[in-house]
Image (cartoon, rainbow, N blue to C red; front, side, top):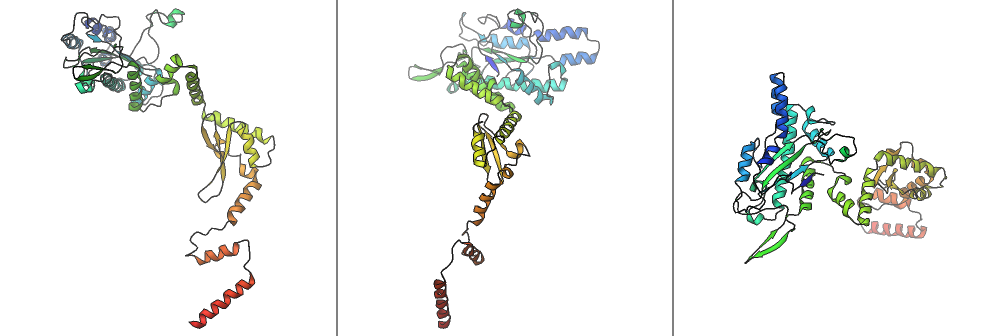
Length: 418
């Protein structure tokens, strides 16, 4: 899931200028500058220049570091010397999420580094990541519950985002501690993430907005005015996850969901059991389910069930329901299987074309068809006398001969009167 940390300041003192942080976020551009100096052609220089990242806002891109510093440092009206002047949220992605974005940008299913992308592919990749960053900051704004005060989207804030594509191992990383990696080396795979610098004050400089506030949707009252304060960090992460899935049409697995991860870490034993059950069910492959059904089928046949009902009962012991498929005419031309553990259903022919349960239990099928065919249908007999005659002649009883003679006499009398 996209992990959104609202309180990070990357080690900087956020009670003063944001200059140190903004300059620090130029580190990838500085690495590119070193490569540009070593470049041997104008084409190579151009490609490296195109890989540089500027800051972006809710509406603009390619904003310079100087403009970022000036905007944040000058947006602090009525903030005291010891008040936080800005915050630095970070938005990180999982490997699966970044692979999905890369596929949308390039059509390539296996991208292991942004260095594999050409200029147009990288531009599209950055555009998609930037679009998501803006939506995450819209959620950030809404999470303060100050819509009545004009905070309705990220455009009402003063913030600047910066996309970075690489990460280095730190001395505290597990891989460094166990000796498999060296501190300072680049991490492999897609590592793209977003750094945000957002002012403590809104664009009007009338409101203080702190994501580190411990209150969550607390109601306060000053005079006759009631308003909500607080920032629910879990709610922000969940809303960012939801908007990611909707915006990128991402089919998130149970194990990837932040809510489930949170339960596995902090939930009750019962809640953890339920989550693990969902994860286990989802992990079952459809082909594996087919194999389970097929194996159960042959195991049951070895017990020589006498009829379809007995076959169904024995399959049920494997948690597999065998259900008859009834077509629109009321006939049962086939069967299908419901695998209870996974909730997956297959037609018999999907499991194996040679199962042919109707042939295995031919007596059951013939009996069913005979009953259906001999049952009279009185539908539309009033307008179809031929059909009525057919129905009457098929009924399992005879009309008494005396009754029949009486009916003929009445018909003759009616004819004479006419």
